[in-house]
Length: 119
Image 1 (cartoon, rainbow, N blue to C red):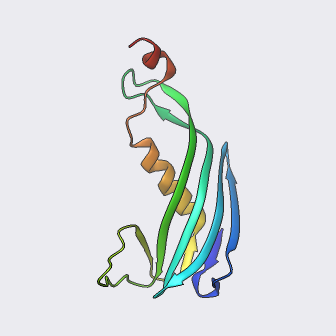
Image 2 (cartoon, helix red, strand yellow):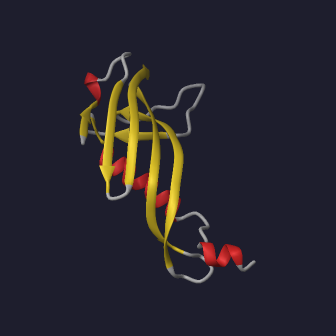
């Protein structure tokens, strides 16, 4: 699902993406200085590898996601914002953003139930 950033205003634009066993649901809202706030919840299950035994397992996900999308190159001001994704074509691909968040979670330290219970 792609959203044209120039069409996002002060009224929140709701979205919901379902992919396999994951739901990415939230809204986009214009903040200031070409910045769009994305606030969402990532909920469901993903398949990842255990960092102890290396076996695949399903990890329960229940994450709050909040960052800004810049319509163009983000130029830092006096109050620099750290969580900014730049969009050079005035479009936000919400599926790509969801997949990026999933990959960040997969790169955390994750252990399966068997390994957690054996410690």
